Length: 262
Image 1 (tube, helix red, strand yellow):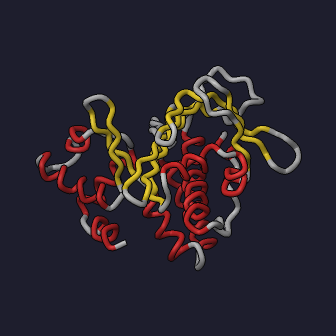
Image 2: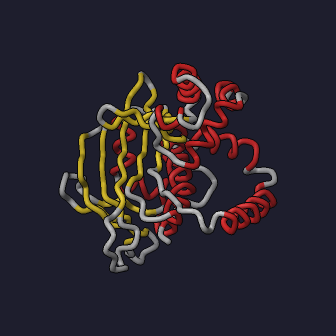
């Protein structure tokens, strides 16, 4: 974690992270508009944040979009906060967030794309199987993700409590085993809605004996859903990582997809 603390030690890099927290998915030009520095200097700071896995770069055509990656912060929270004084800190945080909501109630809210990156000691084939095998998703997600995973096919996020209830439905848009899976994500299948479903993209990139898994969740309808998945994806992917690396999941409740819906 030395690279993480080194990256966070610099106030300019913390400011860059704050800018991305306020508006994720910015280009270098957009970030530089808020900083009194040359593009070359900003690029050097961003490179340090990328190496620390605090920022993820996603290419869209000729553009390089920068996203805040919460995975390292989540790992720090799990190591030093979760087992100690988390309940009290959650209460303090809730009070602070409520005060900020009142202060910003008249401000327009921009809901960005959510990006999460994690590194897993496994093969690309093992990660792909963990994403698409119903029995494995049951272990680390608490739900069975069911489909034949062919482009155009439907997929369902089914409860395994015997009820057979489906919390999320969608369609497979792209499937390129074992490196790329794109699905639509409708977390309110029982509610009639005119909005388009959100889209989740899994990109699996092998590097020697590890895999870089990037999850991108786009077309989010509102801030409430962003808040829900911001808690959910880190929990799901931490469980997936633990299952593949150790054979067991973490001692925490799996994320219920239905919580993402507001």
